[in-house]
Image (cartoon, rainbow, N blue to C red; front, side):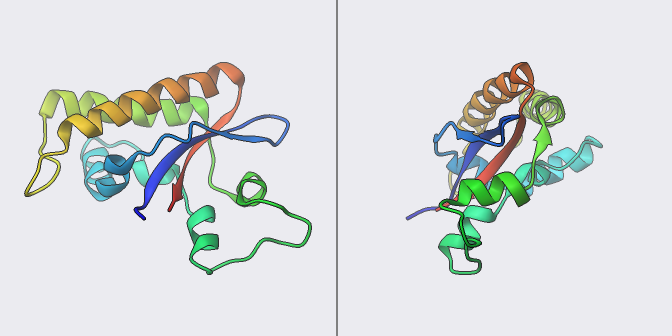
Length: 141
């Protein structure tokens, strides 16, 4: 099993919806994305990450009584950004990456995967903005 990111919306009714699309390159290169964001004086990429699901799956936390899923817990206690703020971070990173063309990885360059996953995430964040929803990436395993 590998660890990946899934993009999520927190709807105004408290419901969490996910694209359930594995974003392995964004997870793998989170530290590099944070460095690029910092150099560009932007909010960090990792500020969009929520660890509720992986903490539960690793046995580090339990669901409170009455909750049936980690989505319920993430909706109540998770890390969320307004869609507009998430979109600003993702668009800013894509601009930096496509202009500077940094390398992602030592043995293999994951540049194309990072750009593809960021572009997909931007579309999902746009939907969050249109719906008035919040956005995050859940770290899932």
